[in-house]
Amino acid sequence: MLVVGLTGGIATGKSTVSSLLKARGYPIIDADVLAREAVLPGTSAYAAIVKTFGKEILQSDGYLDRKKLGAAVFSDEGKRKWLNGIVHPAVRRAMVWGVIRAWVRGEKVCIVDVPLLIETGLWKWVGKVVVVYTSAEIQLQRLMKRDGSTREEASSRLNSQLPIAEKLPYADHVVENSGTLMELEGETQLLINRLDRDSGGLTWLLCWLIPPIGIFFGLKSLTPRWLKKEKGRFSGKRRGS
Image (cartoon, rainbow, N blue to C red; front, side, top):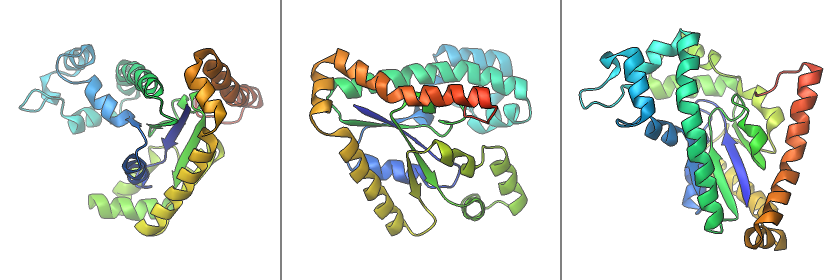
């Protein structure tokens, strides 16, 4: 099974591409959805967050107020790292189980939708990386229009993230989204054609029927990414870990 990491940046159109792929029948493992589920009332993460930040970050129904929580950690790197240390492991475990279930069902392709795929280093653990791209200026204009924010406010949000251009070197496929929805649909279809080509054939069937073969080919496909990680470490170049 081909595991595809789908990523992008705010207002690049990643969620639209994810929806288009889902409509075509591809299983989508959405990290944002898993992150929300990881902090639902009754979970250990929820209890730890409330203990640390107090009930002031709760809504009237007892659920976390994500905006208040985001505001509480936005300017405090220590709290942000602590929160990520609570949520990210739970999300990763859920992602692994989602991939396993997709493999058991006999899926040829599984899409892992992760906004921070590069930043967290998860790009090293997927067979293909897909980056949804648009220019920084178009990102800015879309974000201003979407949120009704000023240019300064939108720029501040964009500057808090890894620039989309810096994600391009990690991409096996780039989905260009600088035009209309119809053009994006065409770009997504080109991606689908490539994924179908990369995931089909006898190799997929053998990997599904005989798990050790699947593990072998999986490790073989990941090795170049791991080597790239080592190369980046010794060259001093910036990587997504």
